[in-house]
Amino acid sequence: MTVNRRSVLIGLTALLEARPAFAEMTVRAPKEPWDSVKFTLRDGDNVWPGVAVRVPGAPGKPSYIYAASTICPHQGCQFEFEADYQAVGAKIGKELTNPVFHCHCHMSTYDPANAGQVIHGPAPRPPFRFEFREEGDALVITGVVT
Image (cartoon, rainbow, N blue to C red; front, side, top):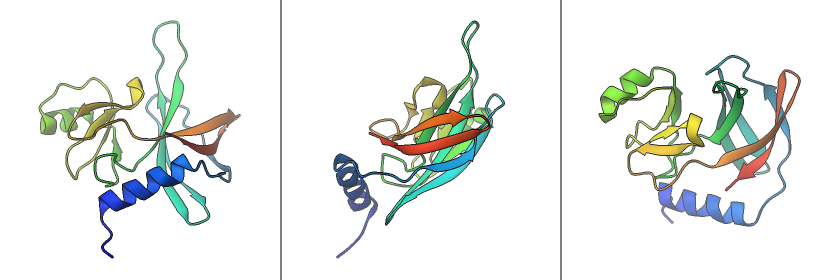
């Protein structure tokens, strides 16, 4: 049997549809605007790489955390949080205004300040998000949202 990125994504989707119970994990919460924290949520045989980013608030609105799986919805590559958004913008031919998630495999780019919206590339949708809660300086990851 050949394993490819598509079969991995199909398997991940099937796992999510079964809504497995995840073990909680705690990581340092990002505190400053555009601070990020990488983590890996493990539940049995399932491994979910992720990143949490502190998105600055707008005037009169507080900052918030956006946490996403770093598995690209296009073909299952792993993307990165890119603080040098101008360099990414030059690669994809778009003027970007804030740090982004960027997949170097096929150039899919997502906006963490807009619920992971696809900015560029072949990705069919935003990445999966994580459920979490903040407890003081900690971020408690509790599961994945599809």
